[in-house]
Image 1: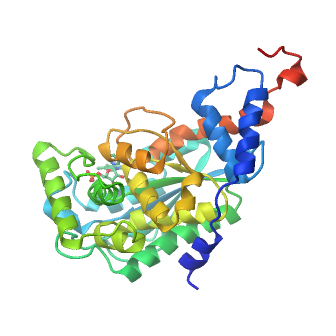
Image 2: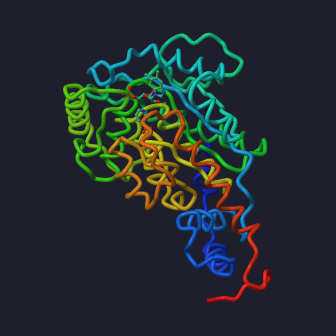
Length: 351
Ligand SMILES: Cc1cc2ncn([C@H]3O[C@H](COP(=O)(O)O)[C@@H](O)[C@H]3O)c2cc1C
Ligand SMILES: O=C(O)c1cccnc1
């Protein structure tokens, strides 16, 4: 069996018993029931994922950041030149990007992987070279990649998640870099949520009105050409996705197989989570949405995934930024279940 097949076989639903125990415990803690809002539901989810209440605090954390390029850039869907992908990948490797700063602030390591960058990338000690293919093909003309390439990219993500967890990580965060990647992300979200391309496509890294129209048109042509089947996760990501979306989907599958929570970033992460859930519906229980962002695809995807974002700071960056800013809240939600006194232990009267 392939790494993908063994990983899918290892994914089990989260624990209903631990979830129920956490819900009961929230009502025994010295606060009005429900008063910690979404921190309570996230804490309960962490218990369900770990299979124990109270759940362990999800730390240390690793941000799995995957870089790739996109043939669909030929359709004029990003205001930025493609070489920014490799340049930013090296900047992230050197510690100078927003995600490095936010990761340091949150106490999370950033692991940068080249899964699909088109340009020659000089060796860099902080960049993991797992290049599957030098960028995708233009999906308006043919499949973005072959099924074998899509599987290989998914397996890069799985292997990265396993390595992080084997190294001690107890929380995984998704990140990416890839000029043009909001276009395949919106295409994937359109397929998996059954929503019009126009509704789930946004301005990415700065598209103007004309470019936004071109993005929607490119996605519509791609979907008409390939007619992706939302039940076919691998076929859909190969047809209209990207190498970093496939790798992030694998990273999420790997986390679920090891019963570790995954905190999602923005629209690219959400599209990859849709792919992962199409592989195995039980993955849903392992997901935590970090933030709601400016991209309209996020809203459709989180509704499809049954998630509620932790924060909304109007971010429209990607890289893993929205997951990193949410991480302290995820960890706080576990600490609440571990460290708060109960009405009985503190001698506080219940209402
Ligand atoms: C300097 C720079 C840094 C970034 N960091 C993340 N992105 C974000 O923008 C890109 C997607 O937007 P679009 O689909 O419009 O090209 C991705 O690389 C994403 O990670 C960046 C974009 C740029 C230009
Ligand atoms: O939501 C995101 O992840 C996003 C938005 C704009 C550009 N890049 C990423």
